[in-house]
Length: 113
Image (tube, rainbow, N blue to C red; front, side, top):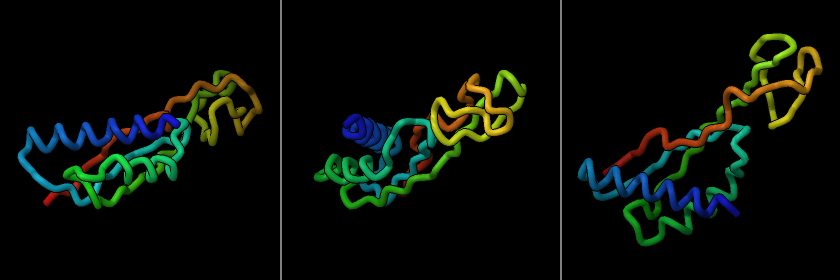
């Protein structure tokens, strides 16, 4: 389950931000997770709750912003919506679609006290 290492990485980002910006408690962490990122949001929520125990983010709300998948169809020469990696183009059916969005996962912002 790579979500555990992702949750640990998020906590590291939070702790680094706390050191550099001088806050001592986090009440919410907002993540952007792309549909094509291969991250299971519910598994990440579970892992986050486990990882933040005893830290400055213990009890923090984890908010996940869903980022839709997009791809560039080499056949249509257009950006198209994509729901999963390796999906065919919804316009022409081509399998030559390169992901262009929705593959990312990033900390969008923090609420701190």
